[in-house]
Length: 258
Image (tube, rainbow, N blue to C red):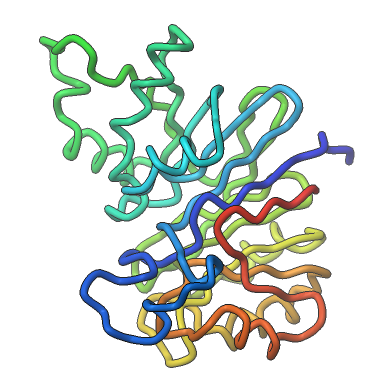
């Protein structure tokens, strides 16, 4: 099966607090290395005609400005936690300049949170200048935005079902610590996988770095990148030096071609 060439930009690679973490005195948070400065996790997926953001973090506005994004066709959500949805209000700038509603793709649970967190968007009497959002419900069936077909992958964030996504030969999974065997079959054959790797120590709802490494190996994916990183993982350069061949820590601003 042929897929359109894609450009993947990592808009953020940090955990819910970002790195540096507010008020933290640790050496990682004080680092001057740009790769140790991580906004909340999100990616931009672009073909020659279509641009999609996965998750609108609290840093969404700055992420769009930093990457000089002028066109956005859709937002696709992984799950309803605040560090993944809080920036949704800022799609209104795209509404203004593109003169159309923003298509938002999310499962039922995430849509319920969006409606609750942004009630003014869906009120019968709408205030001028609020976001114009068109909600599209997704589940685990493939869907298409422009010329990009997206395969949802259900993963588990402790007991919460979260969606990962496969775009052609590229798979993106964040906020997970378990994937059922039937969902792993949707990932196999990818040339690149992105997985969350929060820290070295065991966590109740995120993969550790070693668990993420083991999953890349289990699925036989040639290239693995790790995201949703906390300050507890360590310095980017030091951790990178310990990774197996074909695996890397992602960092803000990293661009991949698929």
